Image (cartoon, rainbow, N blue to C red; front, side):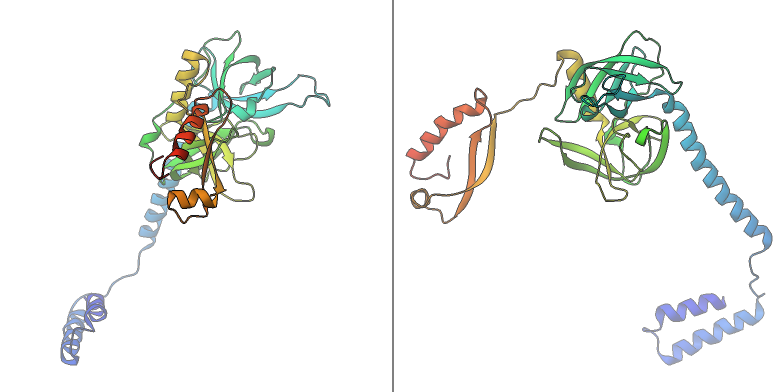
Length: 324
């Protein structure tokens, strides 16, 4: 009760008069004299608290161990280039995740590149040749097929829409050649956008602080339920704890398109834009005061954007450009 009185004085000091504060002090002092004094925490209570902390840490470790044991055997090392290294053709190294027992493997497009020779090495050290079923540089994903193997250990793709910021995740891969390396972290952010090698924006990217290094590319980002919720794809050089993974829902779309068509079909108009100065006479005719504007032009000959030249001619004939 003395502690309660002290808290009451701190909380209501600016509302009470001196008389009220003294009255509170009188009541709490009287109660303190009548009641027993508060005892410090016993050694037993301290041991119980330490045991509770140990249980939490043990549960955290068990969760990571369970994920590693369930998904780890499905992670493979992806090697590209000739078996015998030479100065003319250099090979690459990355990671991949087996997603079906008949040998379908997801990895990054930049890991595969244009290499014609691809090998997969599992956790037992068995090396298998693989071929490319399809690549999608716009999302930095590639689908491989392991040759002549069946009944492989595999992992399932989860639903990345169920992720929440702060959720625990595990990254498994082969960073810098160190096979079957496990790192843990949290989902730092969702819905990020990064630029792919092709220049197209990859949407719905997962940001995590799980440690990634060169060689982790193509490896899985896994939830505590052992579902693959992302494919590790990029890091920011010089930064710490800022890594990115392509969401599993994006991977599901790319996977289905490659299996059906051999490539990812996307609608496009074939038009690119760039900032350009507006000619004075055009600005006067259009009634605008802007000195700079957006110039639209077709990306490639034969693409739908080539028809934009007709639209441009029509726009020039109009008095106002705002409706173009």
